[in-house]
Amino acid sequence: YVRAASMAEAGANANDLAFAARAVLADVMVIGRQPTSAQLDRAEALSRAALEKSPDHVEGQLQLAIVLSLRARPMKTGEAMRSGYGEEARDLARNVVRIDPENPWGHGFLAVWNVEVVRRGGSFGAGFIGASLKSGASHFAAARKAAPDDIAIIWQYARALVALDARKYGKEGAALFDQIARLEARDPLEKALKTRAAVLADTLKADPARAEAMAADWL
Image 1: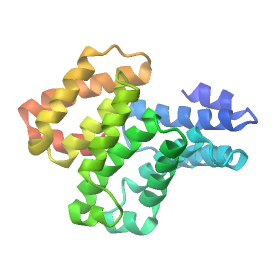
Image 2: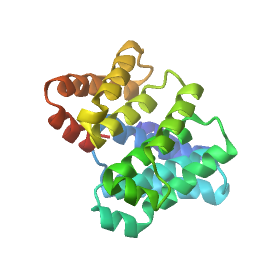
Image 3: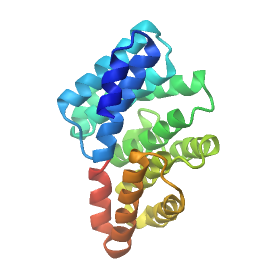
Image 4: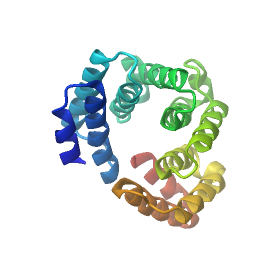
């Protein structure tokens, strides 16, 4: 992914720049931990450069939304709300699905965004910025309809549910992990996510509280 990002970065058009940003973030996702500031800076610069060339570029908007959500992730709830990253990421992803209503990754992002906002702000706080579990489930259903075998989409939503409340949503998360186990990984990222899902599924059975903490820490 690092090599792919460097090769694409040399390109002059929005597609190349957005692909480079995606490759940088894919490398982060394989590792599964919060990226460094340098990685986020690079991915943000690439995605913004793509949008400078093409303001409504779907992939550029999606990658920038992911970067902003990752920037907000380690922040305390109040700091994250003041940063505006969450709302900007939401608006970018909403624009993606406005332009491309069947975009699975736009819907997948919004599915997780809704669950994460509820986890951090509670249902009451989430309501202030238009987030809800119902909306998250709706976006997840749209993402699955468009890309039923995409391991990353299933993993991220299942992980978010377990991080929210492993006892309350563990059964749903476990069912999604079982679906991942039956799918064939198509690339190194999906292979890493499939392994991660198996570990979290086993932990969920043995120790839901520990699984909840792991799910909140992993990407």
